[in-house]
Image: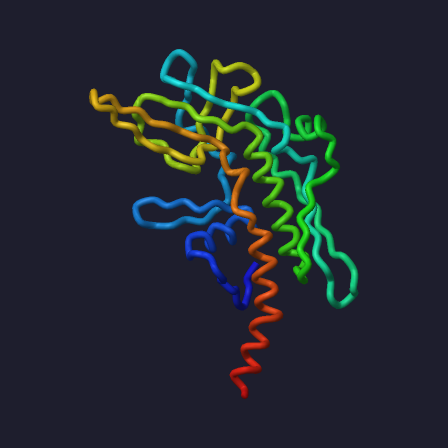
Length: 228
């Protein structure tokens, strides 16, 4: 979706980029001085197989039902019809790890849906993208963890890796969300990979609300002052 203008208020350039990427279901990747904003490519082949007892030094992972929703809905106010406008998320199809699906975990809590509410006027396309983005991040955060492996410089954030030998709950492909390298004093090189730790992100919908207020309240007032 293209906006004719956006208001950036009381937020750094980087955080502003992150919020806009988040609300559109995308991630921000920085490499060699360039910035890429794209959807997670979870259908890609795994670049590396991580196998228990072979190339893994440490492994930590958890599965939390509190991060999983049956669906997500975004709601805003239609100024013309004076009625609520609503959009429900589409299934992102990202249950590629574990023998438990996100919907099965969501049934444990039994929450019918996760609601995103905006008091301003958003069109259908923006509402749909917002709801889809929230459910996508929920599914990506089904399993969160970190693995320490022997040094490897071929893996980047946004890549997929394969986990084997960790049991049915954690086996499968994992989306790499962060990478850092450790060089120990005894010259040993380790690489730390984290996956799917993107659930607790900046509340983009809160920023959207303040941006809407600025657009409909502050900017017209400023224009009137300038005319005088």
